[in-house]
Length: 149
Length: 251
Image (cartoon, rainbow over all chains, first blue to last red; front, side, top):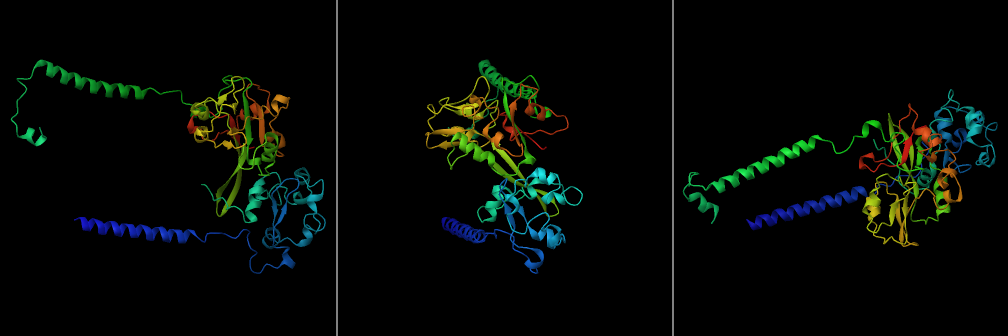
């Protein structure tokens, strides 16, 4: 009787250990790429820079991606350049009127994001405002939050 | 005598039992019945008035403090620029390893591979029934009798961290420099005592997410916001019964 118990215990123990190791291996290489890589066929000369543009003025953590607007939405370069935005990255955020008030008045992003052409500037804030957390994530810091429910 | 031996013995019957023995048996039976009956009667009466139906906002005129400080969060306006956190750190000398207020992030599913990011500013809720105050062994943390702010007396704090465990909102940290627990106090010492009307975080917010105010003043913005009939107002973790004073809503 006792020997049988020992055998069963040993079997259970080895199974547990095996399970633990397989879990540890599965959980190991779960690191995700920090930023979304540009898809195949993305031509920077046609669609603009692949790397997203991050603004930190006047508030931290605002994102703009060329791909969403050019490749996905079909806008051409001259839809925004150089009338709404200068070509040089970061030029807009140096201007004093680069504020939400200006956007509501139809300047910068607000030229299209007016509620009829694209979602209005005073709605869906967190689509562009990824926040300090979002920025840290892009630079490969913390893990992305997953849908809670 | 073992039970197996009892089983073998002959049944004595009840004819020869003394009446005292019968009485004791009956009394025991009645006592058991009484306990069960009493319990079921008690379970039919509610312990306290149910508040869930009325929402988390107490009815006007029933705020226990004056001024009754509150903060209303217009959650969907928050963009996690973290200016509030920077202002709090600067004003209240908060070390890098702790926080008095922070921003939480949630991703809400909108279906069809669509998600929405939600930022949620959190801080001490200055509860009407604060679990942290209840568990403090040295009364180092207490409710201010006038304005209801949950205060800290650093000199009394022994650093046992029981309040940290009790707080449903994770709003406390151990400050090494003070050798005591530190937490949000609505800037009572750093700003309100100097005549400022807003906390540092509320003043720093560029999107007017945090509205600091007094619930006993019906003309204050905070009061008006949470008493709009068309708006849903909620608090965090209402099930703890702590009756928090930080209210959340969407603009």
